[in-house]
Length: 186
Image (tube, rainbow, N blue to C red; front, side):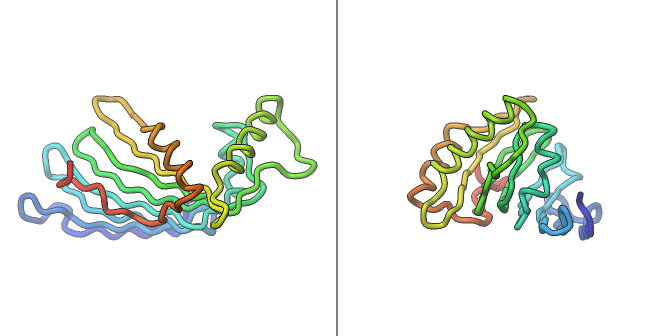
């Protein structure tokens, strides 16, 4: 559930050629987590282009269990998710990254009811993976997922994502927007 949506946008149509229009969106997710989207757009350009920074902070993972079960049979008994993403688009091409931080997660609870064998094994595998990937000092799991959408194909660099999660075990991936993706950078 997304509520308390506030959107502010400036100069979407009345501006000089090549000038980007800033916008800012704030909202609340699941009645507690903060969503913050900032960026610039040029919708008059052909093709339209823009840059986005997205933050979701302090999302209680147990509050999204019903949604998770629709797509994957997994649920969280506790934990918090923070997401920091940055992307650029020009026409139908998009590139960027998303950094996910799982804090103080717990997947398996005593006397938990499983939906079936697949749910049981997925939860056991996820629990083992989270134990292995959790940073011993910060108790966080962090992963950086570089992505690209080009020519109708969506690609996530899973190799890079896996190694970012493994490196997090010894050197902490920093929360926040990196400012490493822009229309000006290749």
